[in-house]
Image (cartoon, rainbow, N blue to C red; front, side, top):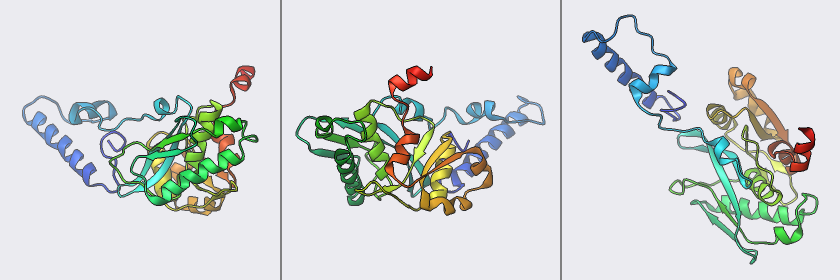
Length: 251
């Protein structure tokens, strides 16, 4: 119910959905349609609440290079957002869409500047990095801002240019500097809980946020793997699938 029907910061909608189930059960018991006691498991939820309102689309969205899974904090608590990068001509311009705030726009510019200035070390040709890019964060009707999408935007661009998809089990958050440092962010607990709710099993966090993991429930910490990053290189080493040649050799 929490995963598929009631994603929110509180429990108001969860209480409403529980009420719907109990009312339907009461009706069925009163009409003799079911015998007591009644057990409602995950297999019966759809019968009582209808089709899921939310989908787990991480694997599908990150199946192609240029899409990275980020973690954010919204008015409804933690959330998972996707950052999409695409080449858009040879003019070198950067186009940003998705109702991004000024700080988030600056994060995208920093990400692109970092990739261009370190193209050779990242295995990207200078010509490819000099192209124009379009970065989009879906759900354009929802305003988004803050610096913590820096690592996600950087990863999306590098994924696009190297042809290496982002691993579907990984979510990430962190601010990036022009020198490639990964700086701490806020809302670690909410972001980790959102990642866990979406079925992600690994989270990349700034190393300086390690102490904030104490706020995450132990059951969630045990179920997930955390990677602490000091630099962009640390993020890319975990987030991207191996190069095709390497993957083929491993197979």
